[in-house]
Length: 169
Ligand SMILES: [Zn+2]
Image 1 (cartoon, rainbow, N blue to C red):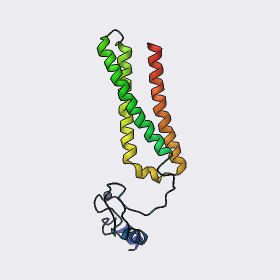
Image 2 (image 1 turned 90 degrees about the horizontal axis):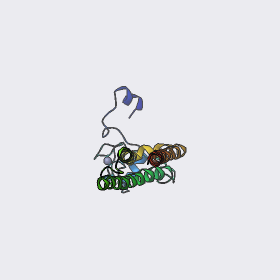
Image 3 (image 1 turned 90 degrees about the vertical axis):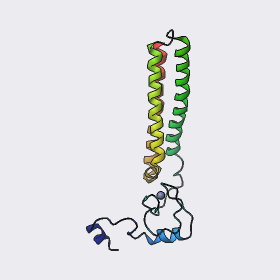
Image 4 (image 1 turned 45 degrees about the vertical axis):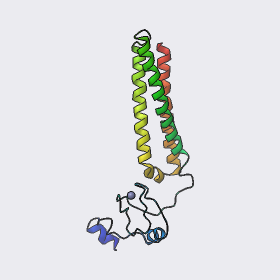
């Protein structure tokens, strides 16, 4: 297919576009999972997953793609979700059992902050997991920078709530 013609007449449907011959020959003899839906794309000759339409391309990725910044961001968010859930349960128990004595505004504010941060971390975790493909497309430096930024933000948010709580009690 002529690329110029293809662009001039608009993007054809994925199944009508020709896949990269290297991709076709790679998939001809290998069981490979679609990065988006997990469908086995062995033998697929189109440049998109037949199950979910995710564009398929053959690419070289660094060996550190599964580690590094990605793990840092995932672990930070997952740990924060777990810790926030635990902390929220403890605060709730404290507020209920002490009925207003210690369960004053400080406790309620801290509980609210913990729940809010926990929800943000849970959403971030789900966004990170769903956009793994985009993450892999970033350069190694970008991945580390983003991972460190996520880890630092999660830590800083918890540190601020913790310090505010300790100063107010
Ligand atoms: Zn798919």
